[in-house]
Length: 404
Picture 1 (spheres, rainbow, N blue to C red):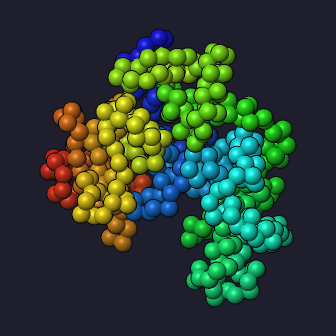
Picture 2 (cartoon, rainbow, N blue to C red; picture 1 turned 90 degrees about the vertical axis):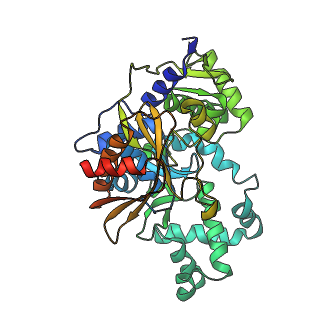
């Protein structure tokens, strides 16, 4: 495979991400395992205007599912996933833990903003935080703050000097791998615990790979999840440095695990995983979170799909182009539109605040999107889909919903 058309590259990428499987009638933990093996990570984000980001890639690939699957995978034995800085903060398979040990060790020797400075400036506090968790078991930052300060009122209000320093100490210990996350409480706060009470024993007993071995494994997994990718794409998947990724890519090329390839319109070298599938067609129909691996590297999204995508959460409302929380619509192997969505849980409605077609969207885009929005609303336990008039797709989309 020496060269690929852009359409071939899209199909390879979507196949690698798990979009060839038909949605399951009732996804199980086995379905979850297969999905996480393909995505590699689930980026965590607390924004809950629609659904928290880590739930959405599973929905996009498995169809409507019981979100308790992710809680069980992260909190019940045998744990399948654990939180760490794998991409951004993310759920990752537990067997990836040894391959990030070099990153954890780096926390002790390299500056890392506030958390690193607290380890330098107040090592006694860091030790006290770690000892508290070891002694008491899984705890939230507020609970640990109250344990150490004895001021439960201040802990409840997240106020005071000690709160910020305790939180910094926890972030340092989490980055260093001395603490991990045992679960989340109802307020979506991390519950910290020591790794030996969270991770399976066989994972903790795995010999620590050398940094070079670990970097090869990270690129190997990125290549498997991408199917086809530039070096920049491979580097970004697990947030690697340019030099370490370059060496790992060269090593995997030499071993024949990835092969150099040119992709139509990319303008930079690319690599295809030796096990990548090139299907004749991809029959996907789903909405993608802004933090889905298919679209999180925006340059790649534009190269693969011709789809310029920016998240506008932090843009002032009057300057937004498409909306606050905008999801691309994947139909077949193309991104054909985008919708600004909000779950109005109080009134049990899915609000479509803006809906937009791409210039080359097929004629049935509104009809297919209407079906997908009904499916999404059902998964979110919402009764109705309400379309605002904003966007060039709004009228046709509203008609599609009315037709049922």
